[in-house]
Structures are given as structure tokens and as C-alpha cells.
Image 1 (spheres, rainbow, N blue to C red):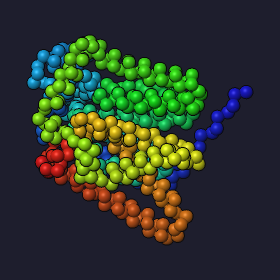
Image 2: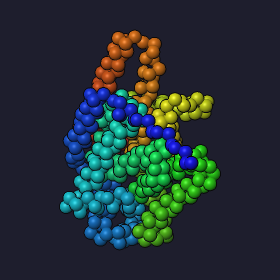
Image 3: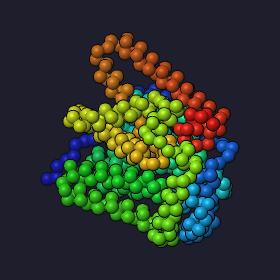
Image 4: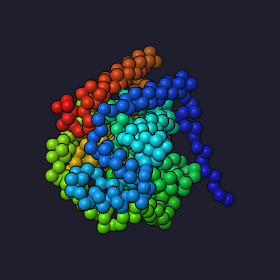
Length: 425
């Protein structure tokens, strides 16, 4: 006989009061409206302009235009301070939106970022409900909706918001894979999304590596070493397919390597990079404290706490779904966060795959702390504490949205670089 799998417990969303669903829906609507309202931008950055140029080439000439763009990039040294035309996953979607909307300007790229940002909000709400409960979903959205960083990214034609969406979608697939239902389908979806992130931005290589490692460990625990080797092989194949697609579309390995080498060499002497995009861990700490200190500090603390509990062997076996989600979120934040700190160039945009995870970790920390304190408090004190906490969250959201307006609308700061935020211009 084939043993029956344990019935999957109803997610917390199924037990949530209707009022909470309504509040979450209102928050989602507000978040989308804020992103649409923030859409117009007076001037585009050089990166946005070159992304638009690449997408226009793909829109007019198809993928066959990419080798020509690559050759032009390699042959013109003045272009080397800008990103090379290697991010096919980003430019391809921009080109598609240009064809659909009939607008071949940078607005197509900005629209892609806005749509990505709105979908991120939906996934944050879903992850909160599914793995941590309705209050965590509400809190996570409370952090994500007014996020100055997310609002700034949502109005630009950069690829960072798309990368954040693909990363979060891969995380969803990874967590669903762990539930035992359609494991193979979810594993393949996770690897596909992680491999696609490689085509959106070079950071995707780390995302694919972490996804492959996580799936390999899960396969080992569930089915033994043979399944783990198969999963590792699947991850390697996914990476080779993504990189191979970029190389073939870009005109060959030699041309792509020359473009990447030229960009790397130019960055080492680029005045903008040297002035605004260099520093250590303080660079990121200072920038996040200036823009959105509450979710950044609470989310980082939650990730470190989860890692500490793992190292000490104190795993919450009573809530396996919640524990698995916490572990995955913490691994993503600590892994990519460490890589971002070690990488010579710095920019708050480079942390885009982490912001939703920080929001969820911060919300989970608050919910778990409240859950631990609840038995020691009277119902009246608990209600007062919860009301005060929600009031603080609302005020924090208002302040954070005000920071977005101040820095990126009124002062018109064009990039998410800490020195410009400190200078206020």
C-alpha cells in the first residue's frame, strides 16, 4: 500500500475574520493607488535611458538585434560606464510592453516596474496569510505599502523591481514545494523563476544558487541522496540554460565576455560609482535608517534570531509551515545581504530582492512576540497593547510615505544611493 500523505492543514487565511480580509484588501488597493500616483517622473537616469534604448532595439528588430547592440556597446568606450545589453529578461519584457502599449519610451519600463511592485504587494499579503496568519499579513502590508524604497523603484525603468518580483515568486514556489503536494511541479517552477532572474540581472546567479541549494537539501531530507543529486543537477541545468540563452542571444561567449569585462573595468574608475556607490555595511545601514528604519531593523533582527535558533537547535516543531517560511526568508535575507555587503559597489536598489522578505520577517517577529506575551497579559491589556501597536504602525507608514515624497518627489533625488540621501539632493 502507498502510505497516505498527511492532510494539509487549512492555512491561517481560511480562519481569518472577514474584517481582516477587508482591511488587507483596502491596504492592497491603497498600495496600488500610491504606486500609480507616484508613476510620473520628470527626468530619467542614464541607466533608464540605456535600458529603453536596448528595449527599443528588441522591439523593432527582435532578439536578432541583440548581437548588434552588444557589438556597439563593446566598440564605444563611452558606453562602458552603463550596463551592457545582457539583461534579456528585463529588456525583453520592456520590448513586449512597448509593442502592447504603443509607447516606446522609458514609460514602458516604468510601467513594468509599477506592475511588478503591485504584484509584490499581492504576494506579500498571500505569504503573510498562508504562513504566518492574518495579523502578519496585515503588518507586512503595513510595512510594504508605504515603503519609500519600493515606491521609488516602482516609478523607474530599472530592472530591480522586476528582479524583486521574480525572487519573491521563486520563494513562493519553494515554500509550496515543501508542502508535499505537486512537489515536482513546484520545484521546477522555483528553478524556472530563479533561472529567469539570472536573465533579469546578474544578481540572479546568487538567487538560483540559493534556490538550488534549498531544493537539494529538501530533496535529501525527503527522499535521500539520489533525489538530492537529481535536484542539484536540475539546478545546474537551469543555470546553464539561462546563461546559454544569454550567450547565444548576445552573439557568442567572446562578445558577451568582452562586454562584461568592459563594464567591470569602467566601473572601477567611474566618478559616480566612486562617489556614490562605494562603502561598507554602514552604507546600507545608514540608507535604510534614513528611509524605512522600522521594517529594516525588525526584519534584520528577526532573520538573525531565526539563524541563532537554528544554530542552537531550537526549532518550533509545533508550527512547521511557519518555521519553514521563517527559515527560507532568513536565509534569503542573510545570504543576499552578505553578498551585497561584500560586493564592491553599493546601492539600495541592489537590495531589492530583500525588502519584501524583511517586511514579512518584521511582521512575523511582532506576531510571535505578541503570541508569547499573550498568556501573561489580561485581555484588556492585550487589546490596549494591540491598538497602540496598530496606531504606531499607521503613524510609521505616514512618516515613511512622507520620506518618499520628501526625498524622491520634492527634492527629486534620482537614485537610491546613500550619499545623495544624506546630502538631501
